[in-house]
Image (cartoon, rainbow, N blue to C red; front, side, top):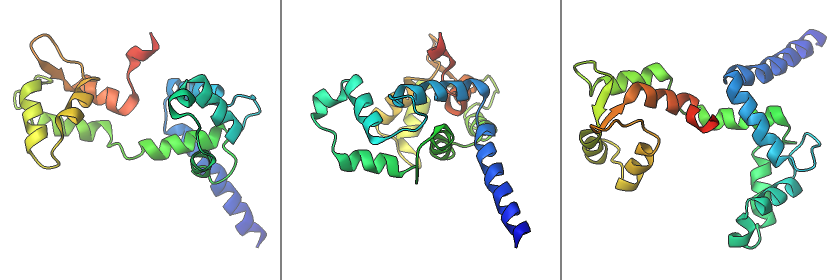
Length: 174
């Protein structure tokens, strides 16, 4: 019985350490900074009062007047317990886990780039997104294109876009 307990404990430790392997070191640092901004009382745990103060600092309370306790509880309940940094990182990992690997996204873009240039025409790609399979709305396309590296000729650098989709926009740091 004792061995089973130890095995279970090691499994829990392993799953915690796996969340750190899901992100690059620079991403973990950005999450630490975000966590620090939300953890208003700096006790290492995000609580309802921390969220309320964060909303207030961001000016969200002004347009939303009062954030309901139920909304804050709903946010906190996603952590299924106290939200320390590891839980915070795990929540983001779960949200981001739905993103396909970079090579899968690249392979999909390559279907629209028969000459292997690394670029797809923005207007043609927009037409395809709005008329094929899971049709995008014009607003969804504009939102996607807002982060896309597009050259003066109207071509999307899809290799850079894939990196942005899977790793985040590096330009935000400078």
